[in-house]
Image (cartoon, rainbow, N blue to C red; front, side):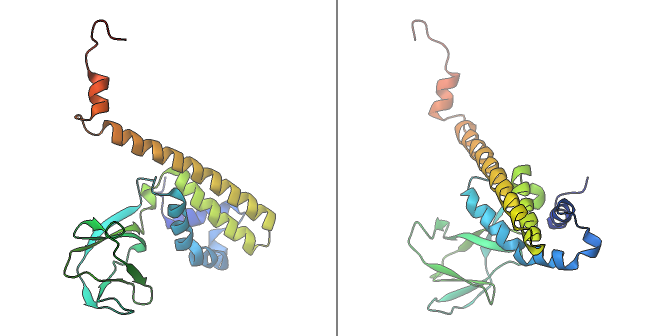
Length: 204
């Protein structure tokens, strides 16, 4: 079985739509044009519940900022979307620091004030790490794109609904996984100590 990738998702969407990858250049281009936006939207819909597909890196390539910001930091090539910025390991949202993405120059704009700058981001090429439901949600969105190119709007709507259903399942499973990790990760937690405490005579 091939490792899941952008290519395997495209091929699966094409076959499901009744098309062949070998003779559907326009269809492939249509999917490629919207793929990053579909992935961004999928992660936004997940509301941070999915424990995969992200990376965190320190930015070091600094230059003079623009648009009112003092600093500009070049982003790695594998960034699909920056989800958070950290200054000296503190979330920019928590310390009310503004930042923007310069899409033309693929750079982060921020006032770093000589602080260490890190980003959390949706990372390209991580499809093999996605859960099955999350991957299917993305695939169905690709199929909806193809059906709209083929002017089959009703079928496109069906694919959108299928995508939403699988994303809901991905969110539920991701939330369960995060909850389990929080409860059982540390042996010193009160809940875990209570669960492992010996039974005492007379307790109810």
